[in-house]
Amino acid sequence: GAGVSQTPSNKVTEKGKYVELRCDPISGHTALYWYRQSLGQGPEFLIYFQGTGAADDSGLPNDRFFAVRPEGSVSTLKIQRTERGDSAVYLCASSLRGGHTEAFFGQGTRLTVV
Amino acid sequence: KNQVEQSPQSLIILEGKNCTLQCNYTVSPFSNLRWYKQDTGRGPVSLTIMTFSENTKSNGRYTATLDADTKQSSLHITASQLSDSASYICVVINNDMRFGAGTRLTVKP
Image 1 (cartoon, rainbow over the protein chains, first blue to last red):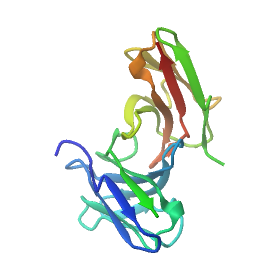
Image 2 (image 1 turned 120 degrees about the vertical axis):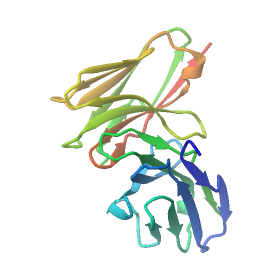
Image 3 (image 1 turned 60 degrees about the vertical axis):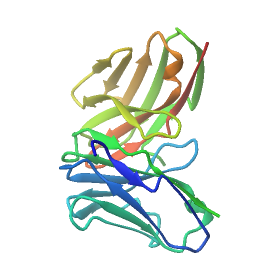
Image 4 (image 1 turned 120 degrees about the horizontal axis):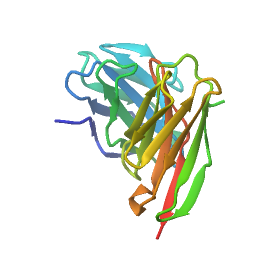
């Protein structure tokens, strides 16, 4: 597709369950970012990939959160033992090379932990 | 403490009026500063991109300014329209993007 695609658009899960959120970046974009956005707040940085490697994962809140990008394209954000506080919109963005190149965002995945 | 602070948190103006949104940051160094518009339920969309050496950048009715010495940026919206109602987010970029909390703008008829 032409833009960044995130699936699912909505996910409701029970507390303690495992979830995976998927991001398909724009083709050819080497940089990929994950953010978490709570209601009324700006996006909070989670992790930044350059190619297949995590260039900066300092935003991951704890070891329940993990992200991969094995082939340098699609990325999956994985959350183990979900908690109600994990409920938020998870945004993915990609840019051609990172740094000063413009980033384009997906629509986000709204995660609700009940 | 957030490295990017925005003010005001929210703003209500009448259609046709102008407004200015503020952004103060401590991120250093940085390669560029961007303003994004985020409609409810959507991902952010870029409005302006400025490098640290630029002072001003316009995009239609949106004009962004940057003072790298004082680490301040502003977004000025002229002749506001109802469709301008959204959150406006200041983002400072080095290798990753650091977001402010945004200003929620409501334009009323």
